[in-house]
Length: 101
Image (tube, rainbow, N blue to C red):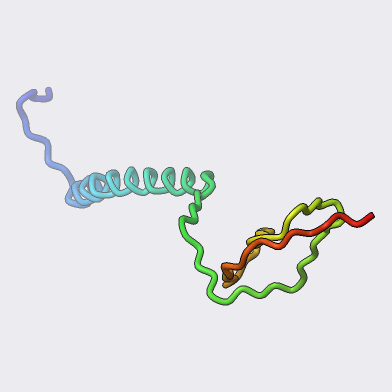
C-alpha cells in the first residue's frame, strides 16, 4: 500500500529539465513579443516630414515667359514673375507710354 505522506524523489535529470523549461518559457514569450512588434513596424509606412530645405546655389536651366496677353498701361517698379534672385528696385519716376494708333 502506498503512503500519502511519503516524499517522492525526483531524478536529478528531471529537475534539470524542469529548471531549463522554466528558464526558456519567459525567453520564448519575450521573443514572440519582439517578433510581433517587428511585424507591426514592417507593416507601417514611415512618416517623413521635411520642415526646412536650404538651396545654396540654385541652377535655372530654362525660364520661359509668355507676356503676349499682358496689358501694360504704365511702366514702373518691377514685375515679379516668381523668380527674383537678387533683383534690386531702382527708385525712378514712372514712365508713361502712349498708346500706339
